[in-house]
Image (cartoon, rainbow, N blue to C red; front, side, top):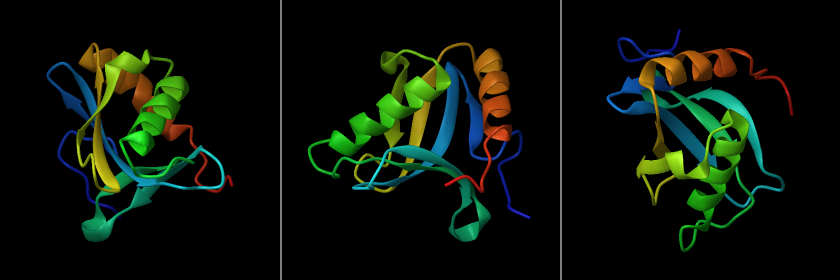
Length: 117
């Protein structure tokens, strides 16, 4: 079984002013999509997201923010990459009420089908 931080729900964890989610980005994908949770080295979970943009000039990060904001129904301005801006493994912060966001995004994560293409 995959390890997670205490109090975390898979790749999701509460923060003082929102929630943070571990993300693994696949740039230059044939189509943009959220693939679902994946296990990284060491057993930590991350949300795998495919973006069509190249990892240059922040384009892949901007595409990541756009796809996550749309999927979660939040403004793009409330989603930002806070760690790993130049790496495939990133931490994304979603600003807002931590309890409400954690509850909503935990339910969203639980609803993802890891077998979907």
